Amino acid sequence: MIRLLAILGGLSGAMDLGSGSPLDESLTRSVVAVRLARALGCPEEDARVVLYASLLEHLGCTAASYEAAGLFGDDISLVRYSFLADVERPGDVLRTFVPGVSAASGRRRAQTLLTAVRSARDEAPPTATCEVARDAAVGLGLGDAVAQTLAHVTAMWNGKGQPHVAGEQIPVTTRIMHVAGTAVLLALHAGPATALAELRRRAGTHLDPDVVAGFDVGLLEGLVDLPERPPAPAAATPGGLTDAQPLSAPATLDPLEAALAVEPDPALLVDEGGLADVARTFGHLVDLKSPWLHGHSAGVADLAGDAAEILGLPDAARVRIAGHLHDLGRIGVSSRIWTKPGPLTAAERDQARLHPYYTERILSRSPALADLAHVAAQHHERCDGTGYHRGLRAADLSMPARVLAAADLYRSSVEDRPHRAALTADAAAGRLRSEARTGHLDPDAAAAVLRAAGHERPSRPAGVGGLTDRQVQVLRLLTRGLTNREIGDRLGVSPRTAEHHVQDIYVRIGVSTRPAAALFAMEHGLLETR
Image (cartoon, rainbow, N blue to C red):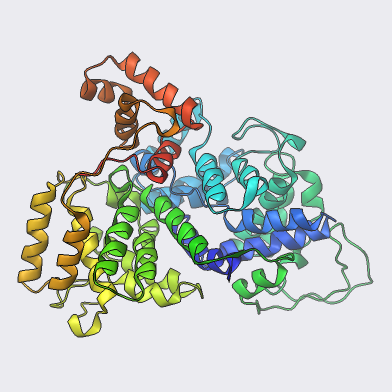
C-alpha cells in the first residue's frame, strides 16, 4: 500500500506549474492550512479536509485554459495574477493584474484591461474550475467533504464569487483554505509582512474575518523565510501562538515531508489499482488544456499498456500508468501553444518541447512514481537520436520508453490538431511502419502498438448517463469547443435545438460547463477516435 498524500504531494508540482506558482507552493499551502485549522480548534477531520483541499486548490486550473488563452492570450499568468491581485480594488488590478498578464501574453496593457472589463461585465456561469476540481476530487477517492470544499474555491466571503454564497454558507474548510492560500501566495511572492497586511485588507471581502484574525505569521515558520524578531512578553494570539516565540529566518522544512508529518491519522492509503486511478484522473486533467487533446492520455495509456502486455514486458501495468502521465508537463506550457492553428515559431517550439522535461521533474518528486519519470519523459525520443528533449539514442531507451513513444505517435496521428486533420487508422499505421523502417521507432514496439490498436473502430458506448446517440454526438462536438451554432451546422439542426441538447446533456450528467462535460466524456469513454 502507498500513502495517497505522497503521490498527490509529488503530482502537485503539475498544479504549481499550471498556476504559475513557485514549485512547492501547493505543499506549503497545505501544511499552513492544517496548522491554521488546528490553531482555530477545528476537529481533526476538518484538518484532513483542508490538507487535501489546499494541496489540490488548483486541481481545476486546466478547466478554463482553452477559453482563458483565447481571451487573454495566456492562461497560466491569468490564474497567477487573478490570485495575486485583489480584484475588488481597481488600483490593484491596474498595478498587478494587467501588467502581469500583459507581459506573459505579449499583448498591450490597454487590450488586457479592456478584456478584463468585458469579462467582468458578463454574467459569470458557475465556474468550470470548481466543477472540475470537485469531480476530480471524487475520482481521486477523497470524499464529499474535500469535493465540496473545492467546489467553493472561487467563492468569496462577501458573496461576489462563484457559487453565489456568502459568509458561513461557505464551508469552513474552504474559508480556512482561502486564508492559508492567500498567506502563502503573498508570503512567497512579497514576504510575510505584505502577506499579513493583505490578509487584513481582504478580510470581509474575499476572506472570513474570524479566520484572518486567527492567522499568525508564525504559522509559516520553517516553510517561508521569516525575519528575525526578538522575544517579547508572552501574549497569546488568536492563532494560538505567542509573541514570545522567536521566528527563525530561513525556511528549513522540506514541504513534502512537512505535509506527510501533519496528515491526521489514519493516513489514506491506496494500492496499485488506486495509483492507476490517480494517474488516469491527472491524465484527464492535463487533456483539458485543449479540446484537441481530450482523451489523448488515456488513449496512449491503453495502447502502451496493451502493447507492453503483447510484448510480455514484466512491468506492463507501470507502462500503462506512465501513459496516463506522459503529458503531465503540458500543464506548464500556455494553452495558446497547444491551440495555435498555424505553424509554431522557433520560440514556441522551444516552449512546447519543454513539456517532457516538466513531466520528468514532476514525476521524479513522487516516491511512488519516480521510477516512471524517465519512461514518461522519453515519449518524444527516437531510436536514431532525432527526438527530444535530450536527443537520446536506442542504447539509452528502455523498451517501455520505446513502446510509449510508438503509442503516443499513433494516438496523436489519429487525433485532430488545430493545424491538421486526423489521419485515418490505416494512414496512421502506415506512418508508424515507415518510422520503424527508417530507424526512428523500435520495430517491435511499433508492431505491438499496431496490434494493440487493431485498426478497427471501437464499439460506441451507449446509454452512459442516459444519453441518446444524438446527445453523444452533441457531447463530442461540445467538448471540442464548438458553439451551439457550429454544433447545429454540423448536425443539420437549428442553433436553438443544439442549445436544448446541450442543456439537457448538462442536466443528465450533472455539470454546467464545457470542461466538466469533457471530463465526463473522457472518464466514460465517449470520445470518438478515428
